[in-house]
Image 1: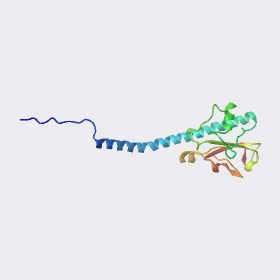
Image 2: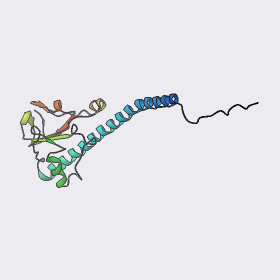
Image 3: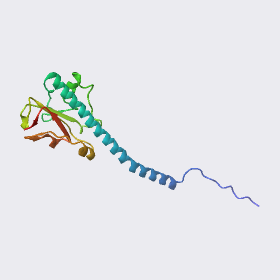
Image 4: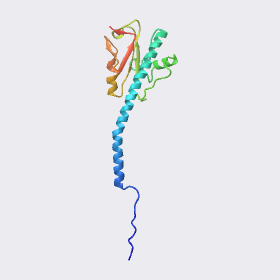
Length: 173
């Protein structure tokens, strides 16, 4: 009588099991990743608003101490950009900002703009020069809906080209 040959047992997964595990993992990643990205974009938009508020405070303090708003270099159609303009370095060098403010995404599509105007430009009136500062673009529609800054004079609505805008030193005429 001969004994049956011992059964070989294999350890590990079959190819089908591995494919199923990979598909389930990919599906879960596909569901979770966009939610994580949206949360990151919301956080960056909130930081943009906070950074802009810091810039506005620095600009206003600069005016209180010097009697006028910082000048601008006019790199982009007369506007300074935070990424390569003059107004942020001036505020840093004079001690009104602790350091340069970089966009949280470090993207060339997201930046602050700043421009100082002479009294009366675009129908804005006030005791002297005025300024407009804004955020070029948000990443989320939720931020566009939540943060609605406005600065307009009879001759121009500065918010037409920016996702968020504010200013100081002038009023609507």
